[in-house]
Length: 67
Image 1 (tube, rainbow, N blue to C red):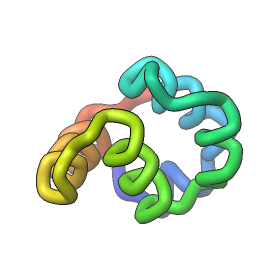
Image 2: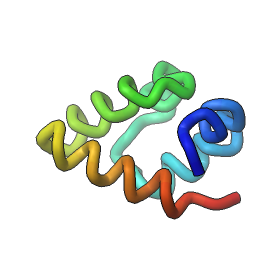
Image 3: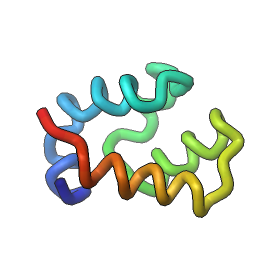
């Protein structure tokens, strides 16, 4: 699924984000508001990932996410 689709369906995507990255708070997810770069930043912050690792996880998630 591409990011435009995810952003357009953000209300549905929020639950999938929470399933994948459980350390993200509801506030984190609300503040991201469908913006990919902000989500990557929050993942880096909560998990201590490098930018590269967060990007790799995001790409894998985008490829595999379904609802």
